[in-house]
Image 1 (cartoon, helix red, strand yellow):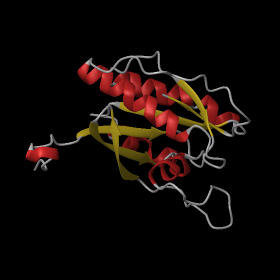
Image 2 (image 1 turned 60 degrees about the horizontal axis):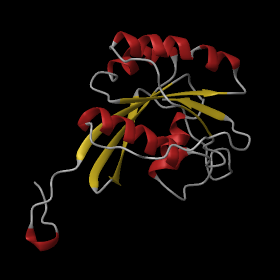
Image 3 (image 1 turned 180 degrees about the horizontal axis):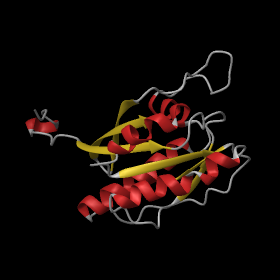
Length: 180
């Protein structure tokens, strides 16, 4: 049900956007999701955090405002273990965006990005995605990466969002990378 906005006019329902996090186990998918959806949460690797590997799938919702439009981001955090691969890829259907995560200190996790890209491509996703280096541990580029992803999705959905600045993201040392 749409709510009433200023002046009593009905506000449109928020636009629902499905984003899927993909990548090998223990590369930081859950840490990135928590950093983005739970601002102020302790950094990954701190004594207050000890994340267990995601079993199956989990998701969080983050409402955002984007050019005066309410958007509800539904972010699906998939399990990276091989035994959950088929289950994880089944959640790709209907997604408007993907975040591929790998750990730059783990060569195998980087090499597996090709496998994940092939799974996404099988669902007719085109390459040419923006690339961001992020760090859940140091809270670097998490907000910006999701903002640009949301912008790209909304532009494809509506074709009306224009003239947003995309900042070059070659910043300080990062530990986890995401390809969008």
